Structure formats: structure tokens, C-alpha cells
Amino acid sequence: MPIHEKSLIRKENLVTHERLTLEGVDVSGDWSTFIQPRVITDYNEAMQDEIAALPGGEAIHRCWQCGSCTNACTINALNSDFNPRYWIYLIRIGLESELLRDKDIIWQCVSCNKCTYACPRDVNPEGVMKATAHWLELKGHTPPSPAMVFDEVFSEQVFEHGRIEDGRVLRRFFARTGQALRQDWLVAMVKGLVSRLPVSLLIRLGLATVIEPKTRGWGPARAAIAEYVAERHAADRRALSLPAEESKR
Ligand code: SF4
Ligand code: SF4
Image (tube, rainbow, N blue to C red; front, side):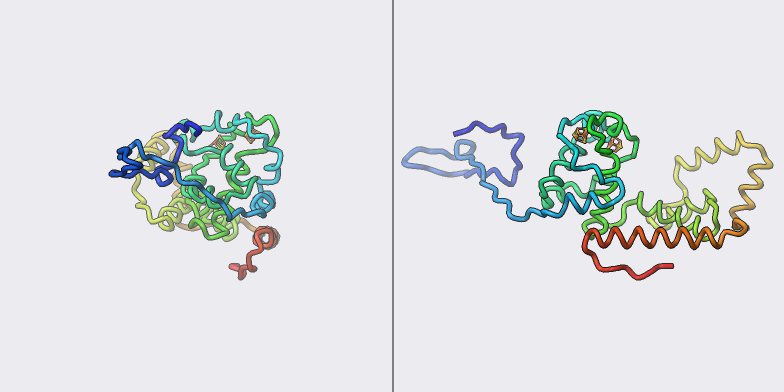
């Protein structure tokens, strides 16, 4: 019988009887520990292709599992469960149910791109993480991540005004993610800015937040961007065989 490292086996797959006697021998407790066999039947053979069809995931097939991405990863250094190499492996063999066990942490990638520079196969692991988080949302496995909500708020501003007002972006982001506007880090940052920036610039920033100025002649650019974004959304949904979404704009 093979010897297994107990710490590597999931608790739910370990079975132990508190009281068990076999052929007159008391094997209660750890003596009766055995590992439940696992039979995996739910391979998603389309998963690699689906993620490769989303922006950032294109080169996932090149991965040779060297682990350099995980070794270099900023988030892995804080939480060893955040493992780009392992998730790429699961995606490539179609183990969707295993990937879903980590669905609530995949979005935490901070796009530092250390993995991208470490990768010897030009896989773009950062892009794969983004594509995977996007895939999880499109499939309905996770709600929109804070990063996705921020992208939405940011894009809405560009569509509406052709420019960005940082204060309004932050206000909307906090409102949409259910966070209080008063955050300690934000107060510290604003205090730092107020003490360093010229008064004229501060007045302009304040007025821009109230007046909400628009970029002149923005209409044609807005229409072109809206068309591109709609095409991109439609392509992503087609790649995952999802029904077309009704236009929001
Ligand atoms: S980009 Fe994301 S996956 Fe890559 S090293 Fe940074 S946090 Fe890790
Ligand atoms: S560094 Fe590149 S090739 Fe190596 S495991 Fe990560 S993605 Fe795959």
C-alpha cells in the first residue's frame, strides 16, 4: 500500500472510525484511517478553449508547468492557495470543479506582472488570471469582482464625459460595492494631496467634480468605443456559448 502524506489529502477524503474491530484486532482511531477514492466525471473539455478565447488567455496552451509564475507571484507570497500554475493546469485538463474551489480568490491578482516576466513560455499568466476571473463571472460562478466593478465605473465615465474625474469614479465605486466613502487610506491620501498640490489645481479639481465637464466633440469617439465594446462583449459570450446580452447603451 502506498504511503501518503496526510497533509496533502483533503480532510473530507479521509475516513476514520472511532470504534472499529477487524478480525478481533482493535483498529479504532488513526489505525483505521483510509482514503476515499475519487472518481472525476465532470471534465469540461471546452474550458481551455473558452479561456483562450477571452482577452489575456490566448497563450494558455503554451504552459509547460514549470511553476516560475507561482514562484514569482506577489499574492502567492501572502497566500499559498493563490497558485497560477495550478489553475492553468486545471484549466488545461478541464477540471472545472477543482477550479471552482478557488473561485473566490482568483480575482485577487493585482496585475503586477511578475509572473509574466518570469514565464519562459510567454504564456502571459497575468492575462490568464484576468481571463479566468472574467470566465468565472460570465459563467455566473462569481459575482462581478471589485476590479470588474471599478472597470465598469471607469468606462461609464469615459462614455458619458470623454474624461475621468477621480473623485466621481471613487464615489461610484464605493457606492456600487457597498463601501463607506470615508476610508482611512483615502482621507490620508487626500490630506497628502491637499498639502502638496497648488491651490489653483485643487480648485480646478473641485469645480470639475461639481460641474462634470465633457470633452468637446466626444460623440463620434463615444459611438466608436461603444461599438467596439459591444462587439467584444458579444464575442466573449459567443466563445462561451452564452446567449447574447441586451444592449445596455
Ligand atoms: S500578475 Fe497576478 S498572478 Fe502574476 S505575479 Fe502578479 S499577482 Fe501573481
Ligand atoms: S511560468 Fe509560464 S510555463 Fe511556467 S507554469 Fe507559469 S505559465 Fe506555465
